[in-house]
Length: 390
Image (tube, rainbow, N blue to C red; front, side):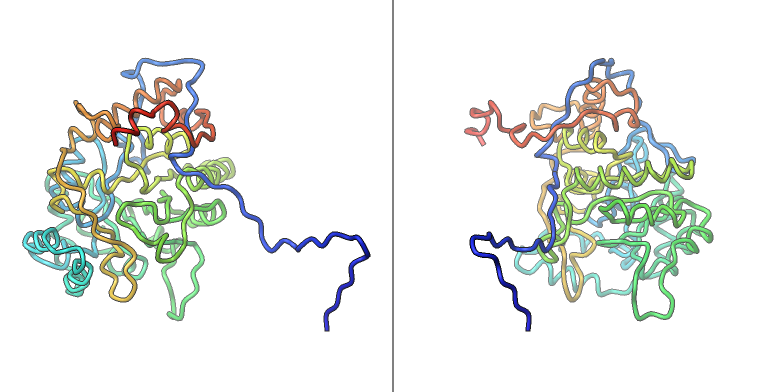
């Protein structure tokens, strides 16, 4: 039997079970202007992934309400990169147009059940090749996404059809995974077999990011549960606010680059709505960002103003919901304006360029060095009249 006796007058202090550290999201931090400013038309927003260079550091999320072949081609022409979901309606149905209309019109109370029904249709391999070809025939870079369980089967098919980038994506991704299967997915083997860059996500920590980079992958998606349509944080209680997650993974990228000379870009995925959010993501260390709900609002998106995550139709434990965002902008206005909105939700690239110029950053890499402070009052200080009009 355990017993413990305290000396008379001694103070009993409970032993510490675990320590918690503070983590920060976009609304809790602010950027400090640089000591030198630059004309915004002189800043360079380009980023690269293994020889593929894009004019703007913005990717469209692999969600069925956001990306289809037509949207991928349209975003490519604006200098961005769209990722198409190879496990969605585009590869389950010859023509998903009517189904997308049904999803848009279904009442909120029953839409998840409808999604589960629609996504129970098997994926058809010939549609994988067809969708990739539809993008490549228009001269666009083709990036496709799949879950780890289907990667060994779908990745070779999509590369053979002409895909330029493979994205392996799940709610949480690690380099080490235990399962009952005889032989799981091996990232080193996948990288060796594929002749195109492999991007993996999602992760939020230094150690996991470093281990993933050591497998030879060429890009990392950062973020667990911050997206507007994702409910993983509520369902699982798992996630790290995006500023902290980006800072931690950027530290891993820099450590890996210092040790090996190989630079692996990190892509902050989700949780961003305004130009200010984008500026903070890059100051936190991102090389590019991935947006979902913002693009879902464009007239070019296939979801008719609706947005849902890859895990929303899960048959046993949905980790997402359909979000009605409306159709109220275009890719042109969202990225480059002109806009009359004052809330920062349009002309995102214009905001990024101006933010870089104010912080004295010529390039995205230099934006990583912008000074950041903890400032939870940044959006409310002095804004009493704005708040009153909400």
